[in-house]
Image: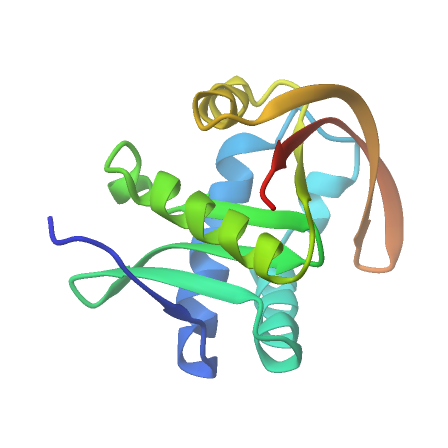
Length: 163
């Protein structure tokens, strides 16, 4: 596998990111989030969300490997809002490269502390963040809006000094 190339997401990436986001979210969240949220997390909803984020901000970065989107991050201020890697690239180091880029972006935005939310029960993700030097700060009731309805998702807040 070639080393990942990091670059800002473009509108040409929206479909690939949305597909990856939809698959990745459904790999990790069903049974761990409030009733009603999973069925609202449709492929169309992810497509709309990604299209808005890519069009409105420059805070979505993709990792490209051999011409394919292998993963992506979304940053919102001091929050590392999304970190997703395609199943085919899990365990390849792409996630660590993306997370390091996210940390740099948060620091470049003038923040000293980055944070992210991990749904309770996503043990694989929590273990990954710990290995990368992130600290579990405890419970975080995280509001999630999907198709006009807000849910409170049980999460853990992870932080890391970046600046």
